[in-house]
Image (cartoon, rainbow, N blue to C red; front, side):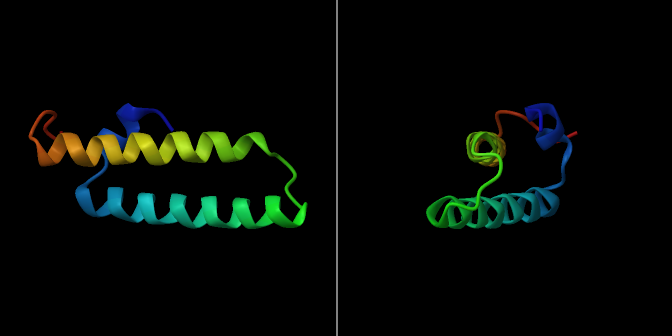
Length: 68
């Protein structure tokens, strides 16, 4: 997901997306631990998406980027 897409989400949608990304990261980490992960590079992309979502939350908290 692009950061622009995260900025277009409402605060509630952003929180829901962040929760689902964290759940996905947990599941992928568990799969990696037991050797069942099909796409190991997906862990990288999920972590990056979590960072983007957290960045948007922080921008909103500091009023750096107003939601449109």
